[in-house]
Image 1 (cartoon, rainbow, N blue to C red):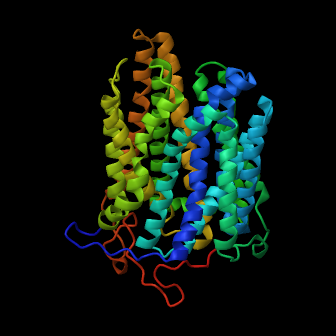
Image 2 (cartoon, helix red, strand yellow):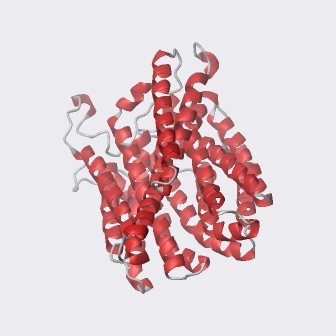
Length: 503
């Protein structure tokens, strides 16, 4: 870890083409962020217009989560085996088509199918985009900057999506689906020109037994059942046999998956990758951090709309203050990471989130916006400090042929974290509403304890990366969790240019 007095290494400038590629790839994570956020704001209008039941309306959100969480691991590995460019373009097209189908839906089942397939397409598209970044930019400060821009764009998409969703819903909820179609079309046209044309990093035809279909089926089934179990947690004790059954079936398929992978000559997931402590720690930290963030955002939205009676537009404008991270992530965070390392910067994010959520615990029935603003600002700061460094740590040092897998593991963790956070606060809120003596406000306060607990657990997980570790002397004093020492550009890949290997 560089000392505080040492001057940080300069970050190599990116070329115009490198920035253009990064803009396209970041556009996909921005697209995914605004898609989720806009729909969350539009759900009440969709429910009223289509006459959906409460359960069906809830599954409009949950079906996307199931598709995303269930197939992200498979999507990440498919990018390695079948080609990152191919997976990116194919699934971006699927995302575009089914988002448009959602806007044309006239029945609830059409909307559920569209959202599920849109989630599946995001599960393949997003890890492919991230692995293109990690294999196209020089490892070290240059790649770190690209990943921090990517992460900041994701958060910015979510924050801006709430505002845009509120505006579009006023015009008509179908525009919440049509707007992503227009953006996806523009990204697709640019991607066809800018994405590197290279071979898959580990083409299945070069492996002893081709694509691991049994492992893929077991992985997808396990993730789907576990995600369904997490989503059902929000129902509390109602229908508990289905919840327990989903978890039991998911865990059984996890066992089957591990058994298949151990015996497969060409496993979908090389189990040895889980020996990378820094990657596992980053994935767990990201799961808990995103869970706390989405749990808090969900309860804050309910508080403003249901208890305070704010409109969807007023709520989205208020919560947009958390979008500060879209500015800080690509500007301040790279400087901090280059100087202090990923672990310390991420810990700063967890600490800021802990303070932010704790400040909101005593929320009152008539709090002014000025009283809420410190929490919203600190939440944005926390996201800028934590999410990008965790993304770097989750992929740093992983072999090029497994970058898609590492990205898939990261996004699987974040999707499960999001589902756990929302389901847990919903379950606690429902329980407190029926047993608490403080009424609806007391239920909100009880549910807001969940994000505090989750982010504290995440802080403890990430803090283990600060423990002194013995490393071979040739590698120097740097911890694997620190920002990598900048590599010298090779003759074939000058500083600031995009590498074209490892697809």
